[in-house]
Length: 494
Image (tube, rainbow, N blue to C red; front, top):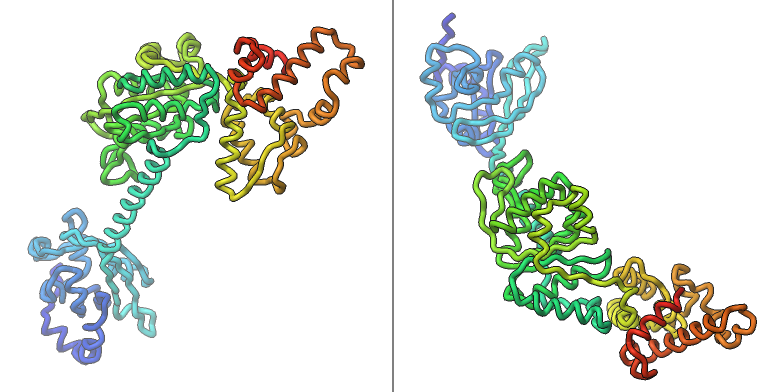
């Protein structure tokens, strides 16, 4: 069937009485407007529609919208000159008129022209008194700029997120760490190792229980290295979801997966390039990630998710764990070859209960730091400090720091007494033990003379520690070996 051929002049003659009233309105609208009749033939459009569609009036007026509504180069309806129409620049798909003609209801659509422009369409039917379509009014808006803006915002969000992630994980040597207190011989030995290892570029494995200060030691190693003026990147392996570990550590290539940044994303290793990356709790990594990490250590190369080519990186790796890696290797939970690659320079940090000399200096430093931060002037009484010396500190330095911070925040008076401390420090017994000396209790205790003497020595040493703050000074004061003082203080807790 041959469709009637419409000419532009036919429409001017037939609908001219409308054009005179509409032209002045259409021409000033910021939206494109297209009017089609009950047969879906375009009879009117404004200059904005011409600009957004990319076609001159001669290419659109008198054409059925369905002829121009191409999909993959195939027209919805045949037309004698379809091939000519298809060659027109700006032929589009996504028109709403064919939908409205069928449903007689408003419709929305996203229109894409062959020039790549995306337009938002809102179409409305004008019905006769009999309920039949007389005209269809379609409004068109350019959303290309909006889409670009949204994409730019998404990119900026990713950049901001990466910056926040980096800034929260990156440390500089100027950042003072109040938890770095070196009074005990054991920690002085650790610091000696740090001085030696820091000057090299060797991979380091730091071992120690949770809260002993593995991160502090890692930063000290970095600050003594040739990379001290470069990035120190902290990555806690336990806080990264299993599904994101690879993309977080190594990044991903553009278009690697649905929802990914179209420009790709750098991983932690790239962010730490030329600097140091500290992988905390490395014992929690899955076997596949252990294999990828081994490649980084051996080849200094990373493979981004979705990429086929490796990237070179220059990163010093410091790893830490509270897991017994030898036991993990024996059980098959940790790769033996990775363990040997990490086991180049090993630093073992003792628990806080094994370095009693550091407890009071740490308390003093934390009190000073949090008093300054929260604008307070709080001090701990001697009896309260005795409780700090008696406690076993299973959470190590982190537990001590959090406890002091909480007390400084919540305490209202200037002096912290034993009853102000948590029950976990044994505050319920401190008052009675402070009111009565060991000698006063001795005749009623039923203890052996040896136990009484030990308890008496322990009380004397405690008070000396409170006054002098150093086991070495106390040992010198009482003309004892330092190891003897340490043993008597440890034994007095039992």
